Amino acid sequence: MSEGNHAPMRLLMLIATPWLAGKAVAMFDEGRVPVQYRLDGHGTASREVLDMLGLDSGDKSILLSILPKPFADDMLDKLRRTLRLGSPGSGVACTIPLTGGNSRVVQMLDAINEERGRAPQRRNAAVEENAYQLVIAVVNQGYSGEVMAAARPAGATGGTVLHSRRVGAEETLAFWGISVQAEKEIVTILCRQEEKTAVMRAVAEACGMRSEAQGIVLAVPVEAVAGLE
Image 1 (cartoon, rainbow, N blue to C red):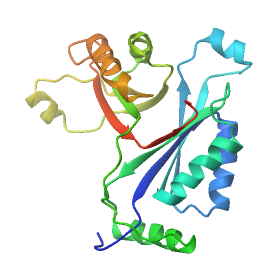
Image 2 (cartoon, rainbow, N blue to C red; image 1 turned 90 degrees about the vertical axis):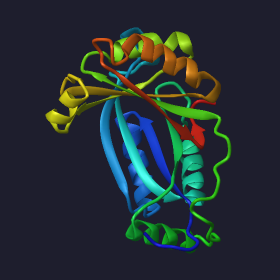
Image 3 (tube, one colour; image 1 turned 120 degrees about the vertical axis):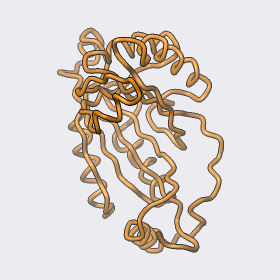
């Protein structure tokens, strides 16, 4: 880790259709964004909603990139305008504050910041009160529907499902008396700050560790959002 003044870092996350995600990748490449990751997932909209929007499937792509805050703000605005985020069948994007990074990443982000004539700031500068939160529920495979069924009445408008597999020592789980299914589903839900507690409570009550879903529910502060306005 490096010391001194550095551009504050943000994780820029875009959840969109694969076609729009491809356009976003081209935008990132044009902007010479050095760190990009792409994941596959699917939305939680019903078949009836997909038909109403004229969409063939609920497939989603999740793009993750690490940027200096001023560049992340600019890119978020560009994604909003170019991809028309918020319109039916498009997607959402958000920026999440990061509090640290290895020195090579910090150097790359500082170089991007300087290239665009931005003044360096302290990386650990205080983040303003967030209007949105990213609720993350990790449940056993096959229970993402139950998560959304609990979350929607509490204020959630939609979510994205990622498939994953638990890794870790069986001995540790046994020590805590936990029997966990290996195949997991990760449900991400963007919601307003005032809805976060109700959404988390509803999901925890329906799909918590004592249920067959054996869910863990977390929340991450989101700094800026495009597509939910």
